[in-house]
Image (cartoon, rainbow, N blue to C red):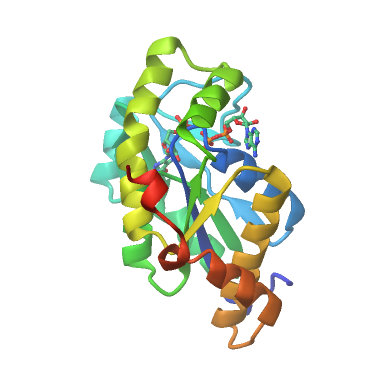
Length: 222
Ligand code: ADP
Ligand code: 5GP
């Protein structure tokens, strides 16, 4: 789809317990869609691994973050794992005006705020790992966090899953990455067709099977 300011913009919110693979999915999606852009958040945490300023995050001090809050510069912000993270309002407004797909890698508190502000344009997708054991394995394999940080992230996984399964539009299990990627493509194709008043029958079928109400949440809420 072309970007000409007349295509309907989409706010694609991806949330997940840390380690489920939402950043991997978000980056893959953006790499394959010229009309998509990754929403770069501001955070008070320090860079991890090969993360770069302005690409992965805008790394700011607590004072700078507080100043942005005071100026009402954020579309949403939240405290996550003891650090602050926020999406700048200008990022959302510019991508909607350009008819782009803005991809957000944000937590469930932020996702709920984006959905409440832009209920028509925002599509919320909750990414689950195939199991909690696999989640821990991925967090350790990523090896960018200290043991204490991994324990904190695993401890927070349960409440993140509860909220995601209660509130999000779609639920996607990231077991095989290629399958999860195709499912995400179908959700976006279906939602873009909806906003443009078209129908994409194949995408609709896949997307509907991933709607939260269709997913067996039981095994995750034990
Ligand atoms: P998140 O952004 O949700 O915290 P990441 O995208 O950083 O998660 O993924 C966590 C780790 O799991 C990374 O090392 C990533 O390469 C790996 N990973 C992501 N998706 C899959 C998958 N489908 N199968 C196996 N490993 C995966
Ligand atoms: P990480 O430190 O692993 O990059 O991110 C920790 C958590 O913060 C993840 O769940 C991530 O999605 C979330 N996060 C990143 N940026 C934002 C943001 O701008 N707003 C909110 N609410 N959460 C964010």
